[in-house]
Length: 249
Image (cartoon, rainbow, N blue to C red; front, side, top):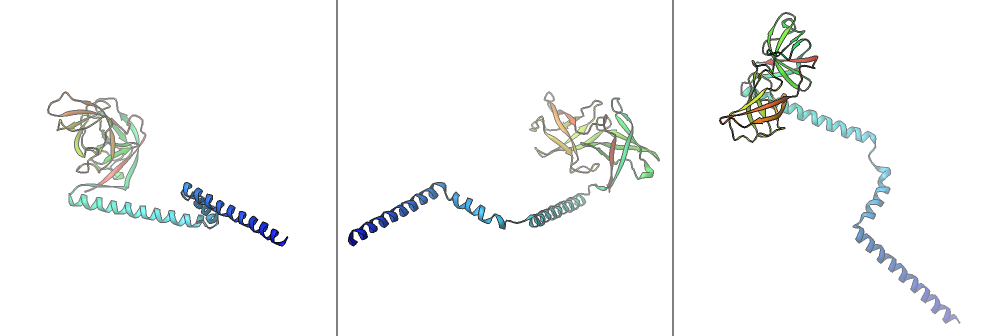
């Protein structure tokens, strides 16, 4: 009787061990199929109480901000150094003069606006004027209390511009309507509608990289050069406040 119980007990334990091995085998197959994702999920829950807190996140963000500030300052220094080498003018946003538009002639042939800041405020002839959206024009003349700005749409306006996508310069000329013309002296230039233009880095009259406008249409009928209509980003007919940038010569 004792031998029968021992054999029965031995067989039961033997069967249980087989089930254990079979279960381990299935588990390993599951891990293989899931590519270890179960371990990652398990680690997620185990490590969650030890994740970096808000304090460490603030330190990281502060470090990122400091890094970005250092990079911006380095870029500014490089830009200033290169423009000094090329004997180009530069501008200082810190010295920008805020001014209100007190009169405008945006629909006439002359295309100009009058500002409430003049020579007593430090405004000089040739200063660059910008508004929401980008470049508006340049100061044509000043009085003690006011200054007149020739807009980019005026026939008197001619400024060098830069087409970033194709890396070439052009000349933006006012023609007396709301869409000044961009003149390129190469007919084979691959300019397209939607291309963005800004003030030229090589300009001696304007600060570089001021947004100006977007190519609206291209006239292909000229053999020697293309004429392109530009939709300006800054709208002088609706702008009430501008900034006058003082140039460093």
